[in-house]
Image 1 (cartoon, rainbow, N blue to C red):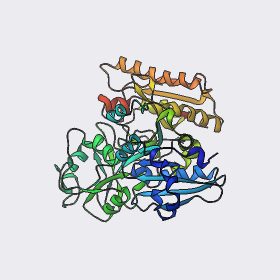
Image 2: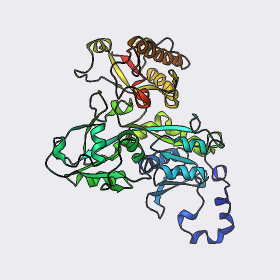
Image 3: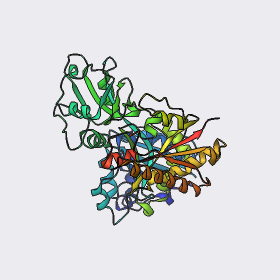
Image 4: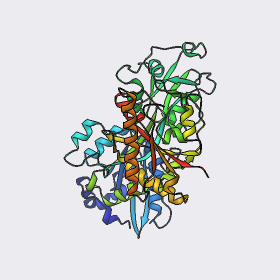
Length: 449
C-alpha cells in the first residue's frame, strides 16, 4: 500500500522542505517534495512512463490520478491520494543521459533510458549498484527506431550503410537513391537523447559523423511532424511517434529489408529495434519504485505498453509471411507452427541468457498456460552467428536452444523440443558484437491448432 511516509526519501533535497512549511503554498509545484522521481528519456517520459505510473497509482489510489504540468518543458507531475495521503510523482523527460546524471546525483529514483547503460556509467556507479544485474536493469518495452520520410517520397527501403551515408552528407540528393531530384534535408534527435545514441551506434557507428546541416529536435513527435511537412526530409524517431510520416524498410548486411512490425520489433529481428530500459539502484531501490518497476514488466503493465504505441513483451503467436529468402527446409520445419513474438538472446558467452530473457522464460510459461498448451506443442530453434565452419555453427545453435529448453524446466515446462539451424537465416551483419547479439538467438514456435 502506498503511503506518503513510507515512500518519502529523506535526502538533503527533501529534508529541508518541512522547515519551510509556511512558505509551501507560495512555492511552484516543482519545489515541493516528490515521493518518486523518474528522469531521463523523452521517448519513455513523453507518454509511456506517465501511462504506466497512472495505472500503477490507480491500483491503490482513492479517486482519479491527476496529471499536471510542472512549469518546465517535458516535465509532468502525477498526483494521487492513497489512504488519505497525497502522493506526488515527477516525470522529467530531457534525454537518457540526463536520467543517468540524476540517478548518480541521487536526484532520481528511476533512470529511464532508451539505450543500455554505457560502460563508463556502469563503472561510475558500481559502488552503489550493479547496473547490469536483474534488480537494476529493467526492460520495460521494445521500440523500433523508425526511419521517416514524407508520405509522397517514392523511396521504400534503405540499407543501414546507405542510411549512414545519407546522414553523414555523403549522399545529398534523393535522385542518388531512386527518389526525385531534390536535396535531402536531415532531421535528427539532440545529443541528450537515447534515440540519438541508438541511431549513432547502430547506423553511424565509427564510420560516419552526422552532417552539420541536420536539424536537431528534443522531441520525437516534433521531429516526425516536421518530416511529414517537408517533401525532402528524412529523420528517425521512436516507433510510437510515426504519426503522419512514411516508414521505410531497413536492411542490414545480406539480411532482407524489414519494416518495424509487431513481430520484427518484438523479436528484435528488425535491425533498428531497441530495448527501452528503466534503471534503479538495485537492492537500494525504494519500495514504491521497486513495486512500480515490477508492475511495468507484468502482463498488465505490458498491455499498457502496447496501448502507448510501443511493442509489448507479452508473447503472441504470429504466422510469418515467408519470402523467397527463407530456405525451403526451414519452411517445412515450421509449416505447422506459428512464431511467438519473443526471441531469447544471450549476454555473455554462448549460452548465458540476458536479463530480458530471464523474465521472458516466465512470459512463455504464462502464455502456454493461458492458451492451454503443453510443452509438446513448443519448438525452440537456435541460431548462431557466423563461425569458421558449418559444424561449429550447428553445435552452437543447438547448445543455445538446449540452454533455453533447460531453463524452461524451472518454469514448469519439461523437455521442450529443440533444434539448431546453424548460421543460416541471419537477421543482421554476421560476426562481431552486433552479429553475435542479433544472430545468436533462439526463436520460439508453437504448434497450430
